[in-house]
Image (cartoon, rainbow over all chains, first blue to last red; front, side, top):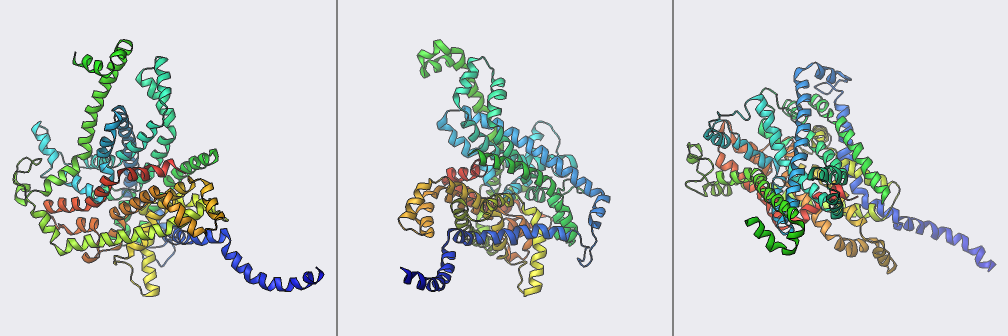
Length: 310
Length: 304
């Protein structure tokens, strides 16, 4: 007993060191860390680093050799185009998200109303705009809005309504980019709301019907409270995506006529990549951060709350 | 009368009790169908018009005839595009980029999701939330700093990244990996703990647990994530527009937008044909795997 106790420790330390490294490598948390390492590297190098790098870029002058502090922002604040872009970005994002949510909500009810065996077919058809790459479908819209061959104007002419300059006139162009965005995004809301509608227990509606609630009261007091969570999170998601939209505006109007439809992303591209002023472009795109941050905080709060409930 | 007959067929006994209610329901149904048709027309109009235009000759497109009808259908636009070396280059670039990006995405996000869902380590909970937050950082915020980073990188190492199609293999995973990891975490977390505990007790390693148990059980989630990664990388427009310019380096969406529009001459027949061919792969996948597609779509917000 004593013998082994005395002679054991030195052997154990030698072996212990070697197997300590091996045990360290085999430990669950170490294995897990190495499995997640590519993800961590990707996020750190290609998402977080560029995000902070753009803050650094925004403080440089055009040739990127001199530190100008907030000079780029001061320059932007004095430009009329910048305020146009701010205004248009807000109009674009808020109205597009509102109509996407509204149309999604209404159409989801229609799909929910019809017999279950037909729902799959309709849902499949109505989701098509979301499936087509937006760059491709916007080309179709561009052709539908064509100044001389517009198929819409052909139909309107039959009713005696004069040709509309869909992408040529500032207000119509603003309407057009919003319309295309609503067309593209409404199916997403439709799918989310449909899933939420299916999770509302039928008994609640029966109880409401017994209490004599009309259809409006059923929606206001039963459907909306039950769907509140999904509505909130879908709207926040869509707000982020719409605010950061690029494809639709870029292809449909490229910001024109006279910069009236530029939003942050397209204007940043025009200045930063096409105009070669990378710091100014980075400054413009940074203006998307506040709204993204606010939306992200709300989404995160929702997720952590649901996480703690489980 | 016809209404009453219909109700009779549906439930003769109910008619007496809830006559007005089922009549309301029948009317609601009819209105639902009416509005569904209206919205379906609105939603399907652009793709249908794409198809109509793709069957027309240039002469018919510029003629003052009914634009919604094809008088002399032709496949010449399809033939012209599918035999043009330029278009086939776009198609090949798009296919190669998308397939490699899907592979990279799955190779990164599946093990990471497994580690985050099952094998807790220091900071893993924070990382899981962080993964979701990075998904919310849009490409429109990152393209300018990435552009500058690649320029600096080529100054340092002499490796030119800008205007090479494979630069997209580096940047596309930033769009696909966070979301795929997030939904895979959700799917993995929903697998009962007893399953992997039994495997570990039987002497399986973590890798074996992942390959033999988690991946087969979470296969629907894996398919949904794969579809998502493919459609995102196929449809991405901003990064290739910013990072590639030479005709032979372009992917399909950018190629169609920049090369088929020559100056002020728009060859709309070919543009619409190209757009339709560009939209075809996601549409075909969607047609066959709609349920997985929708599962992936709703998983982002409802799971986790």
